[in-house]
Amino acid sequence: MEIEIGRMGRQEKYKLLIGCVVPRPIAWISSISAEGVINVAPFSFFNVACIDPMMISVSVGRKAGGVPKDTARNIRETGEFVVNMVDVYNVDLANQTSADYPSGISEAEAVGLTLVPAKTLKVPRIGESRIHFECKLHQALTFGEPAQADFLIGEVLHVQVADELYRDGKIDIETFAPVSRLAGHSYARIGEQFERPRPVYPAEHR
Image (cartoon, rainbow, N blue to C red; front, top):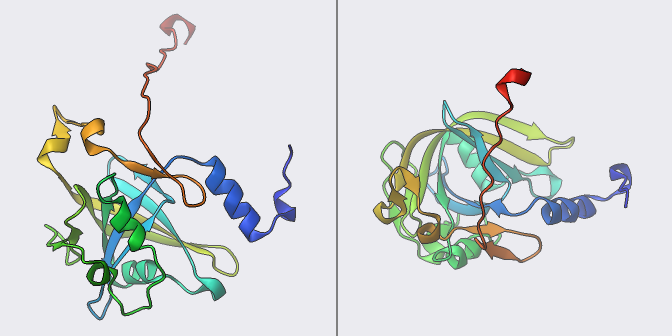
């Protein structure tokens, strides 16, 4: 099937992307408004952006009419946020915070999350998560005309990982038990794992 993007509506494009680009890691982002309200929300348009300096990226879709979501507005205003990783133990709480809470209402308070002070930021970590990336805003871009999404790149200032997850300089993936996003209401756990060593191009052919 050949799909002509120009003939597709927004919802059709959305379903195609989230159905094809899978699985997607979930950034459970905590941020704070200029008025001091703690906002928490999950986003699956999220990934690593650079190793050194360490940076991660997240795309936050806008509401109808091009209105920025609280997360994007907070990050633009304060310049900081925490990415708290989602796993099988906190995914239900993360999902609860995805509801469309009115601005000024703290999802953390409504859901009953444990907020833990960050090491380098005013924004707190989520205690129910076991991996945290404390970030300062490096760059913010707006996509679409009219605006459809805020693409945020954060420089990681500090990382906190639960002791039981970090072994020999690596994350123990089975103990971490991360959860990824699929399409619709579907999520996924880590299934069968396999390795494929990266091939080396023969030196004599260079």
